[in-house]
Length: 459
View 1: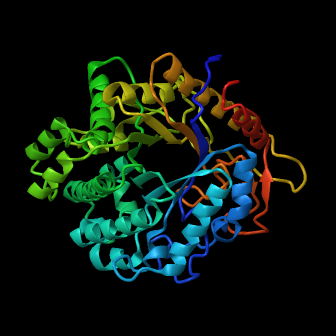
View 2: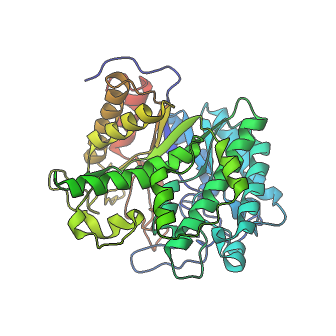
View 3: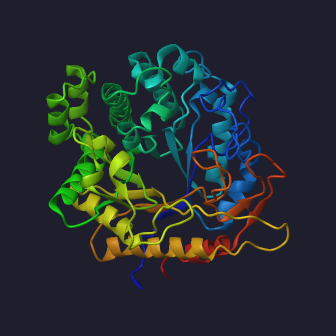
């Protein structure tokens, strides 16, 4: 047990996206996003109600406060505040976030805002193919500047894109407003660059205009182990790290794209719409912190990867089971040492404060309407990951700003499955039955309450 005292200004809290929490998909002038028109399936829900936080945010913030949390990372829905994405702003949408942010501050909860979490306004997807278009880049930067100017007096921590390295993998075609095309490598690289320059323009805007506002890059940390000690396995694991971790943070911190990535694009004649003006803007980039999500680690076998596959796509083919780690029901490994490695590696490499802003475990849980859910597996997961974070801080010397769990009040998973639950609070609904949406604390709720009362010092 690491008994050193945690910093007094350390952040403990919760992270969510608007599409997974708010509901109210057609209220108060909100426009349609690409998620609003995705139907429920046999094993997934639609996105119309989520957990109805649009109407229940006071209740949810009270629960966070009761758990002794002091930060809540939310997302501003682009289509709620600007219904078509590139036209008039919606005062009622902005008013909702005013009320939400003010309600956080009234409870001593620091707000963090994310500007894009996959839910492209439907108009921009249909008319411009999402982030394939420079028009959408300009529209997004316009939206971002409007939100930054409006909220910067109260919100001091910002990220632009959730899990930015997903835009450099095939998931990009599901989260960028991409409606038509052949999902080529050129398209992937183009969308990625367009989102990257969008981030840089807004980060530079913040640094030019606001001295007391902090902006960080954010990625889904790829903790990839070679399956064996064969040099080929070690090499492909290293390439994944370079393409999907370092490359993103390199741009965020003004270093530009990785030389390895640039050489690969050149050798394969990849067209990705980088202009001289883009390069100049990228040279001026800096980050105040480096944020990431971490849930699990993965293993890779070089033998399973066909020749001529881009490193961006290695895990499509080469992912293999790690026989040394336990997994949850969805095959995600439980690897707290990988979490320590992520923190320590990134702080050593960039010497910029690190901020893990998503961490948690998805479990299958049901409530019988009477008894408390005994989620000991979740408690063990968070306890071991917080211990690993403290080892990174106190044994490895990493500077860490805070620890935010993911969806600590149950929400539908990113793939619309309400039965994959991350919360310390149960929300009484299923994929196809909203029931009463009652919030019910689980055993982990009281564990968090006790741990965070003492700023995590007793772990």
